[in-house]
Image 1: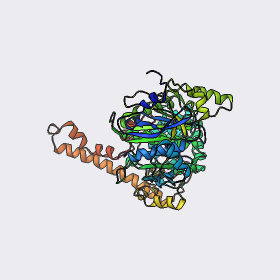
Image 2: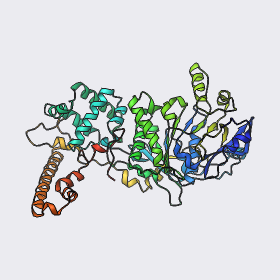
Image 3: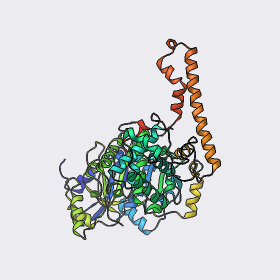
Image 4: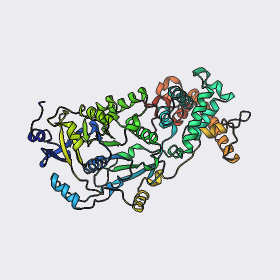
Amino acid sequence: MSEPTSATDIAAGYAFAGPALDLGALLWDGKCLPEAPVRIPLPMLNRHGLVAGATGTGKTKTLQLIAEQLSAQGVPVFLADVKGDLSGVSAPGAANDRVRGRAAEVGQKWTATGFPAEFYALGGLGHGIPLRATITSFGPVLLAKVLQLNHTQEQSLGLIFHYADQKGLELLDLKDLRSVVAFLTSDEGKAELKGIGGLSTATAGVILRSLTAFEAQGMASFFGEPEFDTAEFLRTASDGRGVVSVLELPAVQEKPQLFSTFLMWLLADLFHDLPEIGDADRPRLVFFFDEAHLLFHDAPKAFLDSITQTVRLIRSKGVGVFFVTQTPKDVPGDVLAQLGNRVQHALRAFTPDDQKALKATVKTFPNSSYDLEELLTGLGTGEAVVTVLSERGAPTPVAATRLRAPESLMGPVDGPALDRAVRESPLYERYAQAVDRESAFEKLAARPAGQPESPRGTQDTRGTGETKKAKEAWEEGEEREAGEVREAKESRSREPEKDRSVVEQVVGSGMFKSLARSVGTQIGREITRSLFGTARRRR
C-alpha cells in the first residue's frame, strides 16, 4: 500500500461498507474534518487492540466510547474499572457546552444514553456482585504469579495441585490449600509424594508463609464458592443491546498483581468453554484489560508464552481483547504483534526514557505522512493516533483523530444508585452469599482415628460437631463407593458380557458413576487443565 499523501487518501481507508464503530473525525493540517470519519469495522474487533497513552490523555473515555457502541450493536463488553469511574456507562450523560462543542466538531449526533450494565467486585471488596474462583480452578500457574513464587516454588505448587487432583481433595479456598501443603510435609504425608518428587520443607514453608501474608491482606475472599460463571459476561439485554460488565477494582489497587492475574483467569476460563466460530460478523465479547503492564511485569517466559497463545487462539472463539496501558512497550512484542487495532493517545517526552518510549511507539505504526514523534507529543485530551484493520484485514492508514464524546455519564454513578443496581440484578442471589462446603480441609481433618487429627498440626478450630459431621460424610462416601463396586459386580454376574458393549459396561458401572460424580478425581480435573493450569468447570 502506498503511503497516503492527503486527507482524502486517509479518509478512503476508513470508508467501510459494513457495520463499524465511529471513533471520531480526521485531524489534518490542524483542522478537524467531520466529513472524514475514522472507524473500526465491527467484525475486526476480535482481532484485538491496544489503547495507550499517558495519564490524563483520555484512555478511559475511549474505553467508554467503544463500549457504548459495541453494546448498541448487540456485543457484550467487559470493562476493568481501575479508577472507579466507568460505572457511569449505565446512566445517560449530561449535556454541556463542552460536549456539544465536541459533537459539533466531529459531526456527531449526540444523545444522552445509558447502557445495560452489571457491576462486579473481586470477592465482594467494594460495590458489585462478588466474583470468586476456586483455588483448583484458578490453578497453580496463575496462583504462583499472585504469590510471587520463583520457578522452583511454582513447580512444587504444581505438584501439590497434582496430588490434590488425584486424591479427590477439592481446593476451594485458601484453607484447603494450606491443609494439603501442611499434610504433605507431615510425617504421614511425606510418603505420599516420594514417587513423584516430594516436597521440601523449606519450599512448603515459603508457600505457607506467602498464603498467610496474602490472606492477612484480606485477599482470602477472592477464593471460594460460588465460583463465577464467566458465561454471564456474554449476555444481551431484553432490547438486544450487549450487557456491559464493569468490574470495580479500586479496592484492590494495593495488590495489582492479583487483579491483573484474576483478569487473566477470567480470560482463560472463557477460552476453555467457548466453541470455535472462526470469523464472524460480530464478536461474542470484547474484553478490555486495563493496567495491562501489571500482567506482564516480572512474568517468566513460560507465563508470557501462555498469554501469547491464549490471545492468539481466543480470536477464533469470537473474543476480542484490548490491552490498555501507557505505552506499547509495556506489552511484549509477541502479544503486541497480534493487536491489529491501535488507539494511541498523547505521550510525554520529558526524560531520556520517555524519548526512548516515544521512538519505540512510532516504530509500531505503519508508514505515515505525519511526523508521528511531533504529533504524539502534541495531541490534546480526547485526541489520538489511530490505525485499525480494514474489512479485508489490512492495516488502515494512520489517522490523527479527534474522538467522539461518550453518550453515557462521564464519571461514576452515586453510591446508593450503584448499590441499588447491584441488589436488583438477577445475578445477586446466585453469587452474593459465600458458601463453604466440604473440601480438602474437612476431608483431611476427618481422617480415620489413629492418624493425626489435623494435617495443619493444630486443633480443628471449627468445632468437634463439624469435624464429626465431616468424618461421617467421609465414611459415608467410602461406603457408597464400595457399594457401587459391589453393585457393578452383581450386575455383571446377572448380565452376560457378550450382550453389552464395552461402552455400556464401563458407563453402567458404579465405579464410573463415582468417578464422574467426583470433580476432584484425575479424570474430573487434571486432564482438563489448560495452558495456565486452570481447571475447566462442569457446567
